[in-house]
Structures are given as structure tokens and as C-alpha cells.
Length: 289
Ligand SMILES: [Zn+2]
Image (cartoon, rainbow, N blue to C red; front, side, top):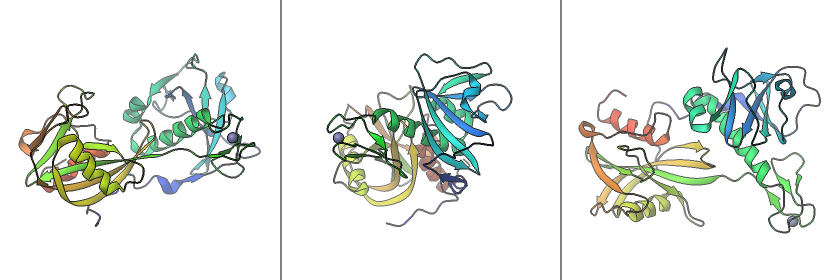
């Protein structure tokens, strides 16, 4: 495999600034960033700096009570925490709860990367309170983002589910497909989870065969994107059409067609790796994107 040339990686400037931490500081003397969740909704500011994460010396200033707390690390030296609230929590004045897609749209990609991290760590904390092997209450594993069972020793780490997504090209056309769950008129790319024991490349070939019944060749790596719906790592590829007629499976894909730049349907949002793959193709076709 050879990486596809492109102008910039998906998240170029964010991650070097964030340092993962497990143990919180003994004393906090400066304001920290608080990623506060009610279910999968995140608390954002409404007034000055709308869409921002609250920055406070202590979470208690908001008058809310949390169920669980995890320390995340530091963003340019600022401590970051995730907090889980009860389901009936109300947003303090000047703030709102936003679902993740809305937050994604409001914050932009780089800032959202930390919300993505925070929500997944919160959910890992919530769903691993007890050992799934023997039912004993788990304890935090010192120095690691992990929990262990004090009785049987089973370990529980945050789960990341790899999924592949692929842009298939046939000359000056690309294959775009519709899931029944998509908004009316929108088409996207073929995607699916990697199965146990399977390479990402094999998953590309299998998903394409299962969903639209064609064969591809020249599979190339494009890039990855962490996707918190619920805990995916999307691995992007490009591929060339080889043979076969498009036959949507009628289940995950209700319609799939070849599209040229002249007749594109509604496309996924700019922030998704699907759109980055499509925009990469459009640029290659000489379009401004
Ligand atoms: Zn156990």
C-alpha cells in the first residue's frame, strides 16, 4: 500500500498539544476544562464564546452534581476532566446541552477531537463498573486508562471499533450509495466494521462485495478519523473498480450508482472522512472544493 498524496492530514495541528494524563493533579490552582455530559450530550457555553467547553477552577461552581469523573490530561497545560451527570440534570444559565453531532458542527474538528475523547472515556467508565466475567465491582488500574477486577483479574480498557470506508473510482466517476437511514437525497460511501480476524483491506473487499456486489483493485490507504458514534476509528481507503454490476443489498444499501462531478447528489458533511475522500476525488477532477 502507498499513502495517497494530499495536502494535509485530517487533524494536523491538534494532537501534539494534548498530553494524555491518568492521575489528576493533587491541587488545582488554575482553571480547568470540564467536558460535562448528560447521556451523550455535552454541556456548552451559550454567551461569550458560544460553543465552548466550560473553563472553571472547579466543576462545583456550576451547581451541578456529577455521578463520575475522569481526568483526561492537559491541553496546552490546561487540565481536562470528563464528568457524567444524571439524566435529569438541567443546563446552568448561559449554557446548553448539545448532542454530539451538533457540537461537532459548532466547534470544528480540532476542538471536537477532545469531546470525542472525553465522551468515550466517560462511557468506558460508566459501562465497566462491574466485571463482565464474574460481576465483582471493578477498580481503576493505577497509572493506566484501565479497570481491573480485584477478584478474577480481568482487565477492561476503552474499546475502539475499527471500521473501513472506501471511495471507489471508475474512470471519472465514483460509486456513491444510500443507506435507508440517510437524509432524503444524500449519498455516501461504502463503509462497515472490521470483523474479528480480518485485515482492514480484506474488510474493504468484503464490504463492497456484500453491499454492492462488485470487485475492486488497487486499494490504497487514505487516512483515519476517530468517530464517536459510538466508538469507531474510521479507516479511509480508495479503490479502483475492477468488475461486476452494482447490486445494492437492499438492506444496508438501498441504492448505489456511479456519479460524475456533473451530477453529484447531496453529500455527507464537510467534517466527515467520507466527504474528505469525496473532496479529494473532486480536486483530482479539477474542481475547487
Ligand atoms: Zn472478575
